[in-house]
Length: 381
Image (cartoon, rainbow, N blue to C red; front, top):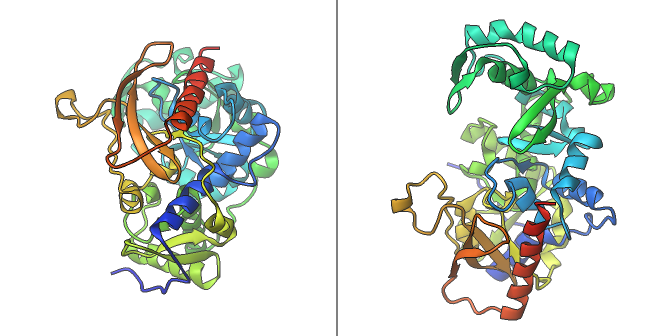
């Protein structure tokens, strides 16, 4: 059973919804004039954004950022990742982009990949793969003369790919750049400053590391509860360990416990985000990525907004309730609709489903969809 913590603040469900969405879309610390700086600020505020290679109307990180950065282009994210190196293309909750400043603190995550899905064939190939990168610079798996395949997540993989991915996940390599879903790898020391690479793990105590990670995941989502959640993927926390982290963060004044009308569980808000409790909707309609941070705990979204969402890309077509790649739409503190985009350009909607009982301003909804259509057109330029 989860620990008992008394709420400090009580919110109506409407207040909680407005605050939750404001944490993502109305941040006062993300208003830089330079769009690349805006991208960096939004990723920093969320701690990480999740990567997924499926690309119907942009990949997941692009969909996350188009709802937050005005006139967003994928080149802004590429610049932040591979030119400025302000963000790292690595592993956190899943495959993620996260602030470079967090690289030393994620040392334990990288250590976890020693022995992960390992085979004698992959382990034996690592020295040759590392020597090749050292001699030739940035390369993709096709550049290595390593025939054969090995067992790897999601099936068989070429040995060269498994070797390069292992060196990347352990921290010897970084992703130099991507072209679509293809990746080029290079030595980490060529692209990350020595101050990051040589910095020690800042957490000598496992409990401090758990607190830091729990706080990051709460910040990533906006509000979060102390219960089993997809938002905690990758941490391997047992319930007592998670309980202890939440208790300590509340006792230290780092998390504020909230009671929300109609929700049995206490929700937790980072103390530095208290400003969001006074936010009002900005009136914009926004299209939400299927793996957007605010969707990391879909049970929370259902409890808070009454919006039930399932990403059905891996569901057989005959069993889907909606469609293959369905995107939610939020406006005025609510989820108001969902739609499936067509695969072709120019942008068009294949199917649209209004949320029952939702009256919306059609003019502002159209403006939001027009902004999304303009974003899709910029993907091809």
